[in-house]
Amino acid sequence: MLKEMADNDFIVSKTDLKGKITYCNKIFMEMAEYKEEELLAKPHSIIRHPDMPKAVFKYLWDTIVTKQEVFAFVVNRTKNNNHYWVFTNVTASVDKNGKIIGYFSVRRKPNPEALEVIIPLYKEMLRVEKSQGIEASFKVLTDILQEKGVGYDELIISLQK
Image 1 (spheres, rainbow, N blue to C red):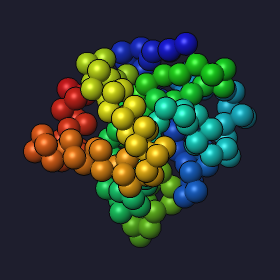
Image 2: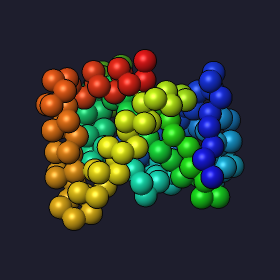
Image 3: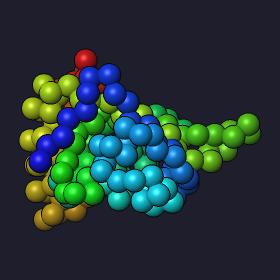
Image 4: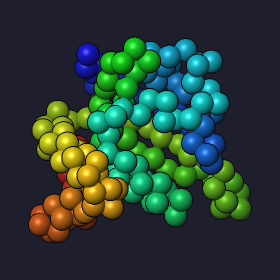
């Protein structure tokens, strides 16, 4: 079953350097259908949906470790095998010396029109990923970016409007 976030909801979570959840807000718990104790110290991938291309997460991790923020559309799986889409912003948390100490993510309801573009794109990326690997899957995305003459951030932000 598809769950939808309310228009004004924000899902917030923090993780350590290995992606284990150190904080999650009430909306995260409600959407993911987990209790706080079931989420804290667990890998954020506990909510990873199998329809989510690994290539998107590779791009996310490759980018945030350089202290650049990432925007993305993500489908998550709940404890009860429901799912929900989010528009996410992930940033590195740094200490006073600029050293990365964790990651911070804020998610909100995605633009439904964006999902009309993203869902078929992710299906194609997954199809390629299963037969040719993550790099080939990411090439599906970069080919579209090149065809449209835009960068990743420009495309993703323009879809969210």
